[in-house]
Length: 230
Image 1 (cartoon, rainbow, N blue to C red):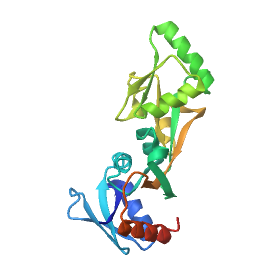
Image 2: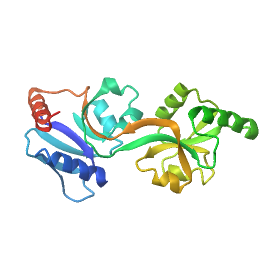
Image 3: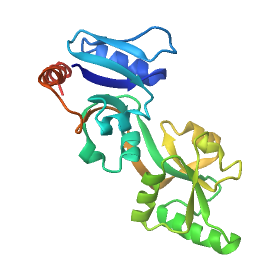
Image 4: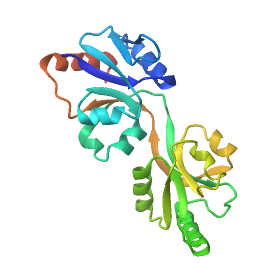
């Protein structure tokens, strides 16, 4: 059997992952057309490449269907409630940096902290008779973060598209989303709360704690870890 390595199947994350492994003399490549999800590994024996969407990789690692996978910290923490029991971080890859944050309209001059947000949410419900809406795709992480911060009187609104635009579109009053530069937030007249950092994320190589390993796969894993210096 071979050690299965899952990497993102397209975009800059795939390209940067290929580049990172190339620096360690391991060549990853897609075989066939861009529409085909097949690939190969050269430069180290006993490893096969599995191309998946970045959001699928945490699930496949947790299920033990792949042994290793490259995806963001944010996706692992959000999609795997028991992630520490299911995966180990082998190596941070130094790219794909992004922060999961809480942001509110820049016009809310009196809302700078989570305590301010809690007060604003209570006032919003009193005035409008409904909970303040926070748009996000990271439901569990946001709920846990706000619970620990003591923020109440809010409702999560699912957003799988351009989350930053939900405030302007009046489908939410605040957002929780990933940002790298903050430019899109500023363009949409949003500001990050001073204590609104939920999670600092980057692309990371993860190892499944649930996948079975035979002797050949163990050798391949040991060789890979030695090669990348993890």
